[in-house]
Structures are given as structure tokens and as C-alpha cells.
Length: 202
Ligand code: PRP
Image (cartoon, rainbow, N blue to C red; front, side, top):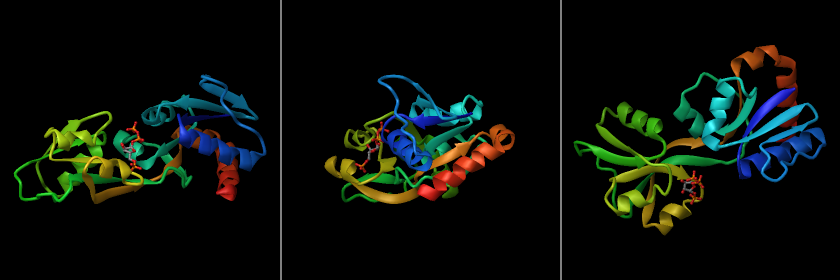
């Protein structure tokens, strides 16, 4: 049996669809149920940011998570396969017409992605003040909470509709299948069978 943590929402649905193709079986969570057990798999329905935590602690053998979320957690997990779902980038959002002013003594950045933003400025040896937010990040520069934002950009529509422009990209992201290190060795056959089957339908 393999336990797989899936991030609630579209990525979970798209991942289960890939499983359906790979194993010729229907995998659907019943209304509000958080566990789905079928054909040797146990799927867990968890919050996006919690996926690496379940896998790190071994409560799930595998998980599906965006590289951006993984980067924020800095856990020691194995990336097994790029599922090529949920493609997006982590980028700056700037007030229209403005540019990142690297000559400023300190830039204030609002973001959900604290570590990714911090690392970016560390590499440039620049002082940064990070303001951690949990959502509606685009609002921050509009009300002078921050000079700019670092956020997920998929189509760019959210930034555009809020008077922001997409600035430099920090990283590209997509959903990856990740594995707990112990499971990787203890359940090697199951894990690699799954990897091969999924790869064949990608
Ligand atoms: C992300 C991000 C933006 C939006 C960008 O939020 O925070 O608000 O998507 O997408 P776009 O470029 O296509 O407009 P998400 O939907 O992941 O919700 P969250 O804030 O709850 O993470």
C-alpha cells in the first residue's frame, strides 16, 4: 500500500485523473472525505502547504506539491517526477510603471514565499524587509504596506487587474511527485512501479 498526500483542489483532481489513466480505475474523493482508499493506494486530501509535512513525517509515502511550496519548507525529500501540472512562476509584482530600485537601502516585500524572497535578496547582498502575508498579496503595494510583492503568477491576470505589473521571475514551478526517504528505500518496487506508470501517461 502507498499513501499519497494530494493538495486540495484542481491539482488533486488533475493528479487523480492521471492515476485513472495509469491504472484504469476511477479515483474520486467522496463528499468531504479526507481519505480515499482503493486498489493499493490511500490518498489523503490535505492543504497545499501541508503536503511536504505529511511526507516528511512519513504519514504519507508520497505527495504532490508545487516546487514553490517545497522550496519554502526546505525539507529533505526526494523529487521523483515532474507531473507537469500547475505550471506557474514565482515573480515580483510591481506597481505599474515602477521598477525594482536596487539602489534603495532597503526594499520592503510582501509575500507568502518568505524564504524564496529572502534568498533572492541574499544572493544580491541586499537588505530586505519581508512582510509575511497569507493571501490577497496584490493588495500590499496598493496601500503602502510594501514596495512590491513576490507571488505566484499563472496567467498574470490577478496582478494586472490590481494595477500591478509582473516583474522579474525568481523561479519556475510545477507540481512534482515527492517521496519520503525511508519509503523510497523500503517500498522501492511500489514507488518505481508508480513512477513508470505515471510517466507513461504524462
Ligand atoms: C495565486 C496567487 C495569485 C493568483 C495568480 O493564488 O497568489 O493571487 O494565483 O494567478 P494568475 O496569474 O493566473 O492571476 P492561488 O489561486 O494559488 O490562491 P492562494 O492565494 O490561496 O494560494
